[in-house]
Amino acid sequence: MFKAIIDSNTYVSILETRHAEELFNLIDENRDSIGKWLAFPAFTTEVHHSETFIKKSLNRFASSNGFWAGIWYKGKLAGSIGYLFIDRGNHKTEIGYWLGKDFEGYGLATKACDLFIHHAFTDLQLNKVEINMASKNYKSKAIPERLGFTEEGRIRNYELVHGEYLDRIIYGLLKEERKENLNVSKSQRSLLPL
Image (cartoon, rainbow, N blue to C red; front, top):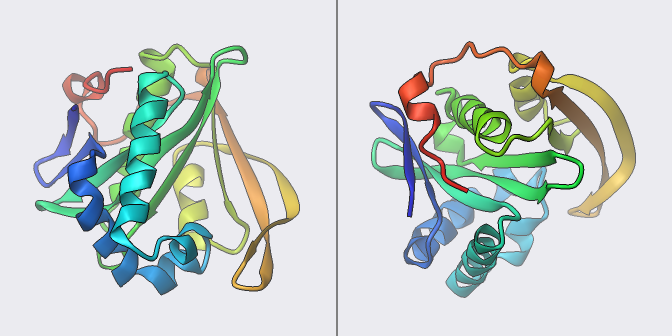
């Protein structure tokens, strides 16, 4: 297990099977808000679905091909963040994230993304980080824009969610473009092993 402290109220920690019920409950309580933009809540209908997801994530972690971590705020699971893959040949990754509705507006996803970006460039020695989301998910789009990413393109009708095709926006950040300017202290930035 690892744990990276972001601030006095917030940390990220790799998801373990013992978190399956807590993860499922957060998804279940936020099914409509998360499911508006992402397909997975529709397929996460029982605790064992979250347990299966966590086991797959741990296998990806063991093979150095990404992982998902929980974002905890004041002792409660607030959401999740992860590397969807790690492309060692092309030195890049993609970060995904989501939060429960009650945890929006605290900067949690931005701070967690900042930590993961730093880890990708510093510890993993990658050259590019991508973040993709539904084109109308304005709250989520604000995060890569705040972190200095460049909008690189749009994939039309990328995903069918609740009977509606959603376009996907692709954001990218190169290592040379990175500015270290958020609230994660330098001593806390290197706590994520991979």
